[in-house]
Amino acid sequence: YLIAVFSVTMASAANTNMNAVRETMDVLLEISRLLNTGLDMESLSICVRLCEQGINPEALSAVIKELRKASETLKVSENCTN
Amino acid sequence: SSSITELLNALCDCSLSGVSWKRRALGGVSKEGFHRALKKRAYGALLSKLFQDGTKGSALRPSATARTPPRNKVLMMCFDLRVAGCREEAEALEDRLGRLREGASSGLREVDSVLELLVCLAGSTPSPPTSF
Image 1 (tube, rainbow over the protein chains, first blue to last red):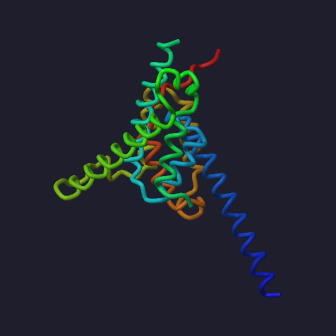
Image 2 (image 1 turned 135 degrees about the vertical axis):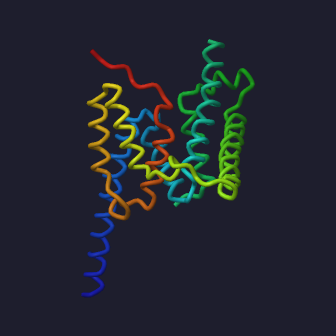
Image 3 (image 1 turned 180 degrees about the vertical axis):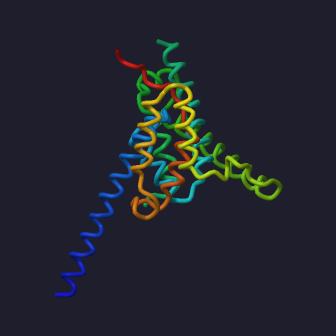
């Protein structure tokens, strides 16, 4: 009986946490859009996980800007060949 | 629970979405080659920033802006938006910031770090055109 109660409590706690994460992610995405950061939900999720791994946010922003520069160069050259 | 390497790979993949690789392959640029080059640039940017931080800490005090909590930085941006006449945007931003839970109740361990990242990236892409 105790195991059943424990597993129900754990499942409910996990559910509550999942809801909190989802809600926080939604608010972060809205803030991101209002600030014109250019992050979509997929890249924001990756960034959140990198921050959770201890990556410095300033360093991560430098990485994102560098990746944008590189992919922009590729897209511009694609347009030129078209 | 992916590793940093896997997450950086995923970030490189995200930045390459929308590129036509069929046409690229004809021009001699392969997806794998470009992905490798991207990863090199990503690690270069990451490490150079981390090494800079290492020298800063030993020689200089962090600036006032660096010590400002990210929530306060967003509030400063709201103030700037109001001054620039963008009242609606400022109110929307204040509202979202008020809805953002703090600490463990947010479900994330590093919600302030994520907010700091958003502050660093603020305005890095053009704002969407307003519709009439």
